[in-house]
Image (cartoon, rainbow, N blue to C red; front, side, top):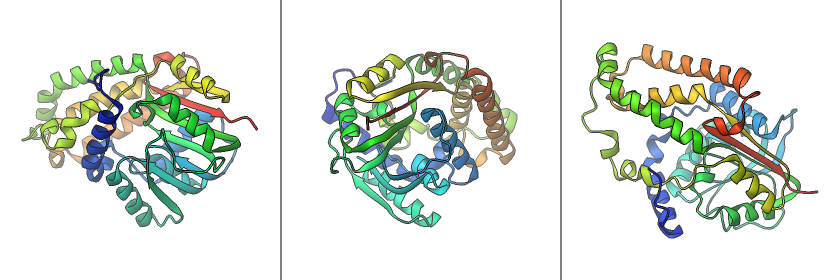
Length: 306
């Protein structure tokens, strides 16, 4: 359940900071985040989809909004799509985790800045790319945020956001979650997993706050309006992941019911490979032909006029 529509901006930001601080150390494991070949392939595809092609382009100075542990940006740096990265978040815990990962990967020149998206502490025209993954739905004042994105971009600079939940997709995700809850006992017996002694949502304050951190689920028209009102051109809003996300939410739900160490490697390999197979069907068959409104995730890009 998302944050209350009457929640103040201060409350939303406070909850998001506390939740993401608490979740930082286990975040990558919980969501299967990878900084190797698999993760790099995933984020490159997301950026290509968002921008409508990449053609070997490299962005000099990039600003990431809501960087989290660095899934989107650090993988793009490793791919050579970004030269210099400034990673921002309101959660110091997430930025600490990102910095530690960058150091472990041998990535140099990463700057971390704790800040809100609506008031960015950077000079006008400082960046060639503003990007983010699964972040816009956490930001209370999107009109102010998009105005800031435009301000800090150089003329001709781009914005690119991926992983934003659609309204239809948000409702769609409820179905595999309910199915996962119903099937979890039989699934645990079948693979020999043990029931989780403490339900995930009771394990920490972070888990208890999870239901309050999301503020928006978007219709594509919402995002098109934001881009237009902020003065961007070459505006694009697309959709991705339909079959793969429905399957992924079902997998995530049954797995959360078991003690992690009791889930076999064989199951994890099957879950991963089946998800990737469905993701390919989405990319090659469904995404080119179906409207963005039908997909779970939305991608957004635009250009600041030169």
